[in-house]
Image 1: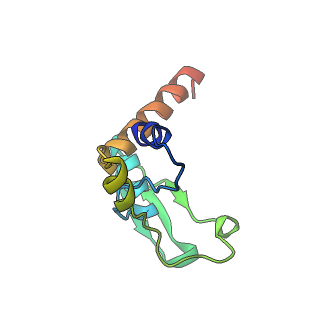
Image 2: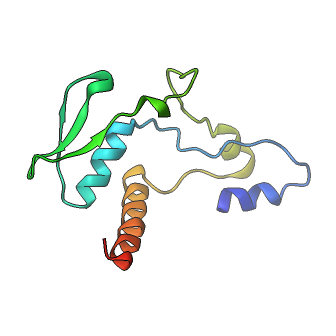
Image 3: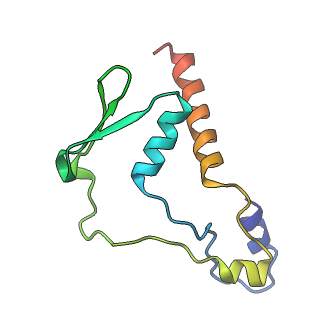
Length: 116
């Protein structure tokens, strides 16, 4: 939000990218998310047949669904916030792992309230 606020303080509108400059995989996101819930993932299979299995229960908890693939998948996605740093004096302050933790905790609270 601070980055957006800094953009709005500019006299002349410009385009800026707000990004960490770090790259993380979906696998890393999944592993960190489940780790926050004290669940360790064992990956089995490969490509479209790969699944994530709870190491404790043996239950499959992650799978791949090709319907969510992008029609023209890009090889890599990485934001360059150098202009935001140079012009706005902005840079990312929250580490990826902390962001994942906040997201999981927020969702977990919603799940508990609904009684799942």
